[in-house]
Image 1 (cartoon, helix red, strand yellow):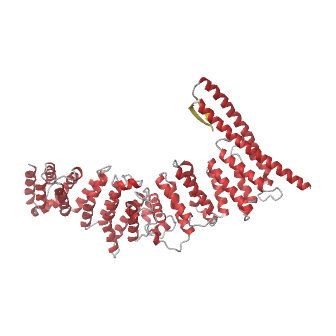
Image 2 (cartoon, rainbow, N blue to C red; image 1 turned 30 degrees about the vertical axis):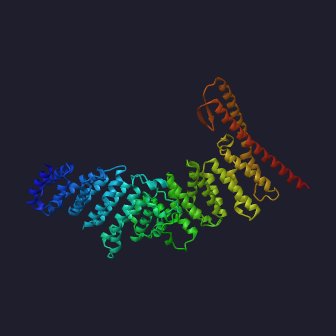
Image 3 (cartoon, rainbow, N blue to C red; image 1 turned 90 degrees about the horizontal axis):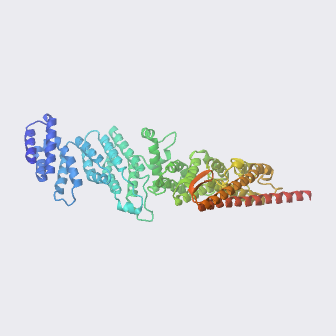
Length: 592
């Protein structure tokens, strides 16, 4: 019945001119064709499409059958006996139908699915889509841009495989799609290369490919994980995709060197300004991803001029590192850590000039490392952040170290980080006293730095438990200074500032310890009484209430706090004892 209906419609349309086809004819043709497919009359439908007499009708109306045919290919089993007929029909429709209508129809089909079906339909339709676009005579650049944008939007919905096993399995088909997308784009890149006239249409095509490359650098390549270099990197589909994208950039006249080194400059030396201003944040992510791919993954690294100095390379990568570290996804900010390590390892210790810290990113990057060290839930990344901060400190010249220490002491707001910085200050003082004199870690400059170290932020009211790491580091530094620097030499300037240190640090610390110990001893007494009643109760530790804690656990927490206070008190007593011994010894020498 459906076949007869279709024959009847075609017979009526065969006597009409192309321009006389009515909207009703299109609707009836689509319904009858759909019924032929639903009822399994695929071979008869194929004969109708192949009939030369129906060529004009198929050209104008056939695109309506693409959707039903594609859905059959997706839904039917791959062993379905009529599957080959569906493919033949699809190929014929692509060959015979109006390419403009087909383009819109194919893109609508690509936008429909979700989940794992996204990759299935993309892999099915990429080649037909490529053929249709190549048949278009006008607005080819617009059509390429529309297709690439639609494809990228759908691909961006797929989860990016993280581990080697996920990459191999490719459950959602992202890796297969990336490979197919490269093959889809290659002819259009070749069109740009082959067109020597630099026509307006060719420039538009170049721009559309450039946008696609930028989008791909952000997704999936910004979050993508790559197989280890020791593995067979040729089998890494995402790495191959990245390599092809970078190759496209060079092919269309935008080599990575020009883009990486000029992105973010006030005066650009590459000419694609409109896109950069329009989507600056997205472009920053793309450029950071590109820098990682080149410098860490080594893709196209051989194009890098050997004359570029390590500090020059670090300077231009610091902005990209800053962008990566600002992201919250571990897969992204871990790349910032890797890119920073790559740049720092090229530089000799103590050679990175302090003037670089006048560049914003040279101060925001270490602050980003502090966030990784303190907020990242993954221990290996926290340790990597700490190692990178130490490596960064090692590379700076003395004035640079001094400037960075001041910055981080003022901005970190974390006792453990401040303790780490204070330990580094102690190391620099030690080197200055033992090896080479350094004005930044002796005398007046050091005293200015010690003002940020040897004090309690809120005086005697400071939360000693929360600040215990910083306080212990400060006391250890002070103990070191008292031991190493004699009062008569006073190389560090400590002895002229001793009274201020006692008033701002030691005396308030004594008072704070007495108050804290009294508070926690009272809490222990209260907890022991509660334990007898065997009730749950709340506990205040470090000004934060911990509710419903069993009394036994409460007592452990409270005794641990008291142990910390005793430890601080013992170091404080030793420092004061050393100060008394040193001042008494100096006084006796002066009398003698």
